Image (cartoon, rainbow, N blue to C red; front, top):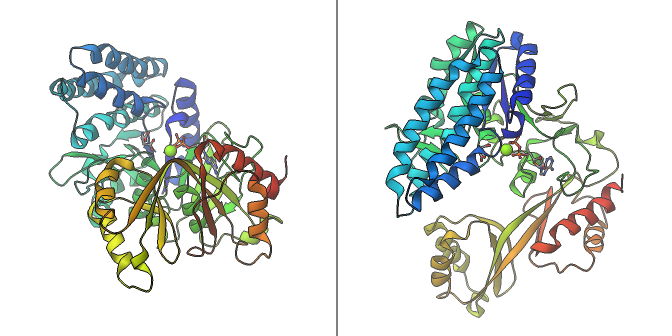
Length: 449
Ligand code: ADP
Ligand code: ASP
Ligand code: MG
């Protein structure tokens, strides 16, 4: 069997879903499992609905009706798919009951998970019906009975053993009968059935978890670009597509901003060595990027660098503690603060008496800062971007660091980190300098066209 995951822009309207039907039809003999995101923009729209509901009144109802109507229109335009509309309305009614009690207060993360996950339930209903209508035997499957997670709402972790058993029990018989299961990415539920989500962009991770559980031949990630590229094509329009990549490279790129793949996508697949193929749903004939353990990275031309990622919205925390000089136990104390508040640290650099580190999620910053004040002098820089240069040639190519910083030009480089990963070098710049630094680095290592 294979897993075919379709992102929001690959199912955003009727023509996109027609393309999906073609892609799945062509793969019928390989027993595909379809995993879908919400239609493009719907997850954000649902977050917007929650904010409207918090303001009170019935303002959210019109907006909700528009979102449902968008799905209904698509369902009516696709032969045989109109049968999905009953399911859409049932979901909308449940959603209304979840939104009403929010009036006058902030939704909890737990409530938000139930609300934002609705997008995937809607899109999968339309797509399952559309496949059936096109003569491809398909069945809608509610992934919440399979993707059992812990209760860390907003970024839940699936229990892989339960998932493996449930995926085989629920999906195995359908695949054996050549019925295409159509299910949701991004969402799950606790053991007691409370809805959870795996975090934004989490559908890729859902696909690979299901692929690992079912020992898929490959996991296809269908998106709106040709594959994993040398940079975000929105920043560098002439970025090139990588034919192959290693799991490690894909993970580094994704962690530092290459949105095309969720950073954890490769994790469940490493053990079995299952390949991921990133493909363009608008051009299914193109080869895309194959991410696999045996990737022959020497085939990649002359550049020692493979790709440049960047991620904005970064906060840098600096701690200066003269008592750190010659002392032990200081870093442990420092990291315990981050652990207590469950704050993820991305990049770290340290000197004799100071440490700088970056965080992406500033929600617990004030609490962290208060505790860090006990350890030393603390100052915080907001509005930063992390630039990550990824490639196997990083450590072995003389003069490379000089080329990297030569290309950065006038931009002020702050936290620099290299060493922990043999294939990755990261540094921070001011957010507004991010795009131009990525463009200059790309020009330095890949030329201008
Ligand atoms: P989907 O809706 O299919 O999940 P995403 O929007 O999550 O798609 O990811 C695809 C986007 O990732 C592309 O449109 C592209 O702008 C962006 N992107 C960022 N960095 C890269 C990269 N290195 N290679 C390819 N795409 C990238
Ligand atoms: N729909 C979710 C999001 O927008 C999950 C995903 O697309 O992967 O984050
Ligand atoms: Mg995505």
